[in-house]
Image (cartoon, rainbow, N blue to C red; front, side):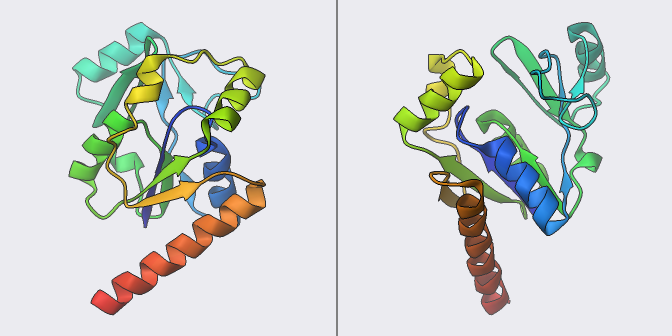
Length: 173
């Protein structure tokens, strides 16, 4: 199953992706980006970090099936990299593109009360912009998941939602 995690900056998308990767033994979709790595990020493990020139060259050559620009940085991935048993963190624009290519993907919109989300962003030094605030209001998702609580609590809510979804699909078939 292809799983997409989406939501505003600071809601815990990457943290949940890592938990799903470890606990469910599914692949992580590694995006290519032009943004600089954060101190804890490693090239090829968290993202493929490239120059703007290299990204634009790949884009012109049609390398990226899904791509977006956000906060003056570019992000993208090749369709063949989004494997059948994979979890991806995508922004709102990328979700819509991915839904066309992968209609079977299950989209989780992660949600966190603003006071907690902004606290996380301030703690990691991420700039808060209106661009980030507005684009997720109308993002298409299958399940809305609260990321309030510990990592284990969030993962458990995710697992429960997956179980319910899979049982519903089984009953339809």
